[in-house]
Image: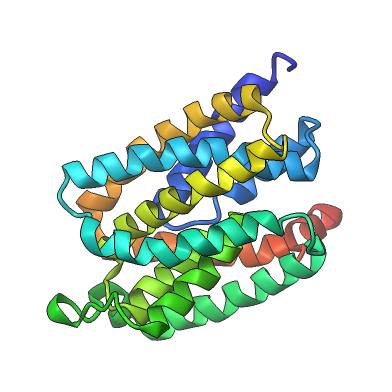
Length: 257
């Protein structure tokens, strides 16, 4: 790799890890960087999982240390997501990327509306005994999210937050650590599939992981201290930025100026 690859990967990884812990879609930063550095799209997709794995190990450890991670319930929800993630990684090369980007962008707009018009649901959840992690609804929801996460990763954290808040009843403060645990679980299996298909560039992945871990370390502290309200505001910003990016808004503004 060229000398400039190292600071670029670490800086991009920090931003990715920070955003992923607090909301999601951080891979929309790192995937373009990996592609810019010359990696084919499928190899960039696989290489990115190395950083995501280490980022979420840090996140899970920090959240457990702070006693905000619902480990038992999170592992139950991770089971269908793992099976979905394996399937998603297997089909990772078969979907048209532009169609996928437009679909994700549309979903981000829908989710933004939900977050804005039902703020108490995201801040308070259903709480206590109303939190649900069993039933066919949860199995289907988290299996489908797992498929998406195994396929592309970018944005899966936001979909998981939606599932955990709207389907299972968590508030954002406690949904966030469970989200990180679920992603860690299915990333392990998805990464194995990318490795077996020779779609991981280890040097770039491990350098990127340094930045991701640093970003995750900072973000977990902020998530615990500032609570659900802060996470909601970060989520709104990320949703808007993600939708604009996927619909080509940044490119359009660049042409204007």
